[in-house]
Length: 486
Image (cartoon, rainbow, N blue to C red; front, side, top):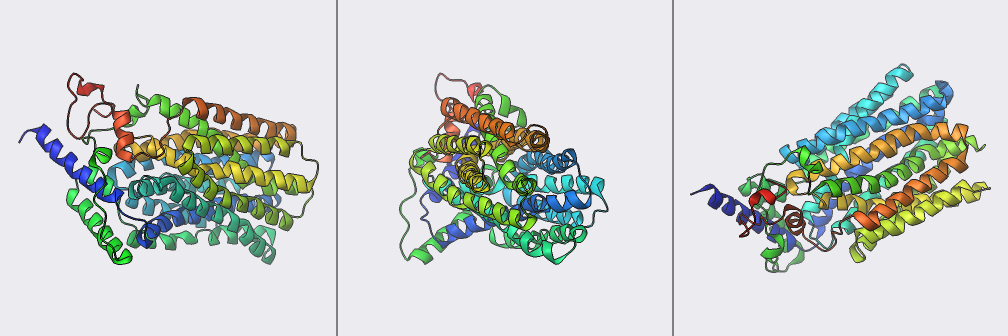
């Protein structure tokens, strides 16, 4: 049997796996996969949020300058940026589940060690190392769920998962409100970091409860393993619903391109560079808004004369506003499209930043910050699922991680480092005007330069970017060299 015939047989098996997945109804089994993946973000949010909640205490006890504060936030984010790309590549090579578990264990250990740091310099580097593990987590839940869930529910479920992230950020300041008054300022931040390391327990649940992606298994040539996972899912669906399954999805919509070698450079090749650059610009606006809202709000309110405990409660209200925003964003993205959801949400978030810049009262500042959180942080579900949908499966985690790395660098490293300095030298008006401008640039790029992915299977989206090579067949008159994944 020649190579083309072998490839065609493998592609047919991959298509069969995808067709069976696309016909599965939403059951408790679907929700279990989504919840387990979403809780990975919830536990990570506790670790990330622990820094923002601890900043006022750290600033007071370690006598930090605005530049020191910016560097601490930037180093954590820079660790995420450095960890994202290799983690995405490892997930595409060795599996989503393995890297997810390893990342949870890694950042939990180093978050705990933050509580033992003898001083600022050590804390800076340990926080960077914790960020490396966090980078392994961010792109994987939406890649996993995107490969499990049928095409009309991907962003809706991603809205739920991203809401889990916001619940973690919401609980972090509430937990700080309980913990910090119990200890001295010099001790409280150490205790808080140690508590935020508890997600290491969750790694075991991921290992036992989350199956590996059948689409990834099939594309790696592990057909029997992929079919075994789908067999269990089908049997569980029949048991839970008491109904026979519908016929497999139309194979034309899930025909899998032949597995081909993929490498990082292809993200910036002729067929993908437009997608990669556009997603990076759009994502930078969301990440800048996110880091402003989730990291610096306690410091901003304290600087305006509020008590630390009050600032934590206000921050909890602001972060909590993102939870319904993410549910709504996921719903809008399935009804109107990923592009429309982004434009609406980030446009209103930019308006919220403009209003925050001109706020003259604490109540006004709180209200406008909630708008930034509801719409700005709430824009993540459509954005993140769109990242996973932009790339073929061989580059899905790599592509999503690369976009996150670049956008987090500009929005979370440079932006997070410069913001406290800007607030100190220029004040909130200029600072939040810049944040609004970045948001509006993202809106313009999203509206004019991105690819809509709503309502298509992952395989349909792959064929659009891959060109004419479909399920092992070569379209007459077109060279296989025209395919992006050759």
